[in-house]
Length: 107
Image (cartoon, rainbow, N blue to C red; front, side):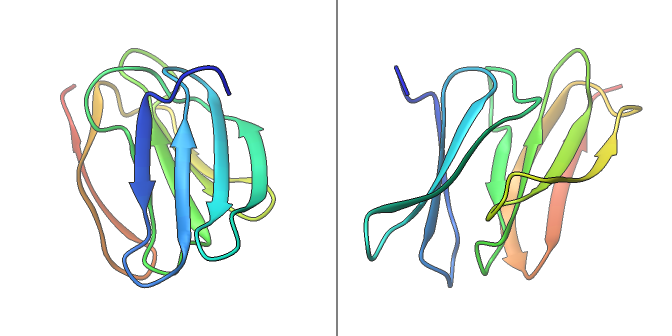
């Protein structure tokens, strides 16, 4: 990873999500300093556009002008869901409950 543009941590787990300014994402185990996964996402730069859930197994990434918001399996990088209809996504509150994300979309 060249430069870190986004950081998000799980509240109760031991995961941290690091992302470049756009697209490239890495998930690390904080305790062991081991990389869990690395993948390409729909992430775009600007604002708060990343979140990782309480347990650290699901992460969400947003984009401002296209692609909407996506949820990924943090262990494998597998795309779990996508909402292309949402534009100008900001993840205003990270995660306070398992697998619950609070979002703002400025359509």
